Image 1 (cartoon, rainbow, N blue to C red):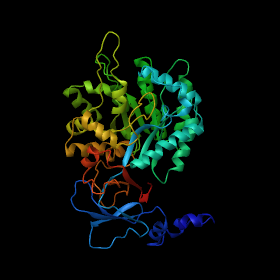
Image 2: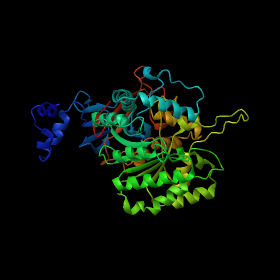
Image 3: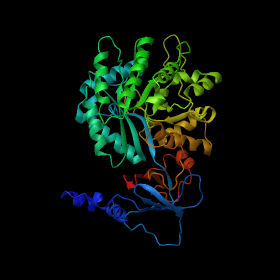
Image 4: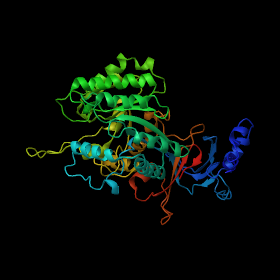
Length: 471
């Protein structure tokens, strides 16, 4: 508050006090959103309540909570946790910002689902993109970000398409959103080629849009979709171009990959790994540059020998697989007139982590469009879904699912280095506080399993980003 007031007169109070021991903490505590302490909370997998002290956006101390001491909730910068569960904040490792909420938006009400297949989703999205304006994408993207923050999300990788239809309108809106919400969550922008970049007619222009965006400091990620190319040679060209572009501009790399369950179609992941090595990613990329493979449903047909080969081929390449179960379950397995079978698949993430030692994350992908017309913004809903999909209802299984939308998701996209969900001194003060519903204050969540099992109950949350209350 004090810093904001002084900034009206051109005075940067934070800068002035940064070199004076102790004063920067005082300035932080004068802010209406800065947090000094979170009191009376339970941490995951622990039995005793604690108080957490925060300084400079990081945890400075964790001490036992004394119920005999008077409450400090009236003090500015102190949050009374009321015995709630404090967990690491959540992350959208893969979400399409530009085409969210199309089905719920009045502007696109004529673009309704009829067949529900991938071809129709591509066609409907293409029609919608012709109507996209910067204000329109900003409005829908703002809703996505606000609902994400309310759910406990403090970082997201936002895919934004650039091509001859959308041009740069969506990207301009995404950059504005990134800047507007930078004090509440971290938005990574992925310049994304959804359409074929080696199309005979439009490919060169589409590549030019992505290449121009890659030079921008506001874009952190290069993304493409090799499987939309019309033959294997063009798919491989797309892979080569994407890797080269990411290396040239020192960006993260994100592929939509192997989105099929056809045993006759060779998995492209092998070529991608080969090309990453040919272009010497480990030597040429920065240590911070990460690689993500999304969907990858073809890999569910792998036998044990293929999984072992995959793990060996990856080695120490910074690769993570991002499972997108809500999209995969809706989009796959459409029977034709001659066959009533509905084969569907999504990456078996817990097995990939526990048995094969692979880095993984789980994300919502699309929200309210023809690719994924169901499922909320809340990443916790994926944990509840995952209990059934992955048949992992144990407490330990739920804790791993939580990591897939929290610490492991952040590590996958490069916003955090640790895979662990452990809260300890020195770590970033990025949390979500799960509180009992006001109508049932006795229903206090004591574990992450409580949150996942009773998703409908834990509707009251507080989100902390870099030591500041964002919701």
